[in-house]
Length: 258
Ligand code: NAP
Figure 1 (tube, protein in one colour):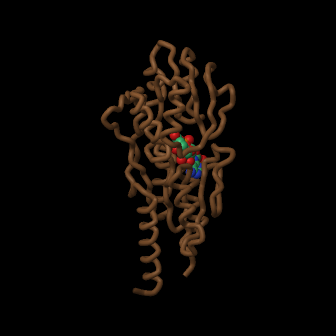
Figure 2 (cartoon, rainbow, N blue to C red):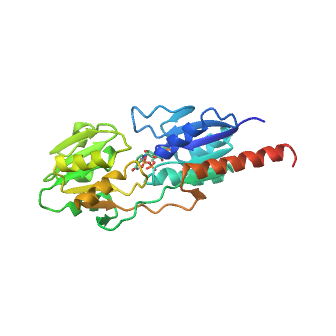
């Protein structure tokens, strides 16, 4: 039988892990799609599309014209627009969709989290008094912190923002996770961090900073998860692979006439 044509909507660790897990698996013909925000994305196997589809209608058109059999939405938990577009487009094109939705981090004993709903509220929550802030919200999301220029920010992002995107008093650390607990503890201590600001991305790769904050009793301003549209979903790449297997098996048994 011919391979099932799979579109992975990427931009997350899960998308990368899924693409790697399917590398060389002849049952699937994999295309990975990225928004194109990162100039040098991690090298992954398979065909790559970059730069968006032009809304839900554009994605529905691509799904139909390129005869995709399956879509997996493995975008980041805060990529709300793409998730909504994917559901709408898959429905319009009649293509089964699965979303990988990694669980949010939950506070544990000893955590000092301040929950906020968005980045503006996060910047406000740092307060008036100048503080040393570890900011890991991503390079596209720095505007609210430029409006709170009294603080000193240690910004960590996968790619360097342009200087005009940065707040005035800043140290930039360009690094890609996963990060280790001991390194995170050292970073927080050496930079004399007083508060951490992060989105509740969930996942193991960026979690060590939260453990480090707990051990140093530092407050964490946590941007809570956005509401997401309903979709069939799993939490892990392993479960997504099992979903693919089921589709493959049901397609091949249909073809054999069983
Ligand atoms: P978004 O607001 O949900 O999407 C905005 C637009 O970007 C979409 O309408 C789509 O453009 C395009 N897009 C997003 N993901 C795409 C993908 N995988 N393939 C093709 N086009 C995509 O997304 P965002 O929050 O800006 O995030 C952009 C990308 O960065 C996503 O892939 C996401 O997984 C990744 N990311 C986001 C965050 C975050 O905190 N938001 C963090 C880490 C990584 P069209 O309408 O033209 O199709």
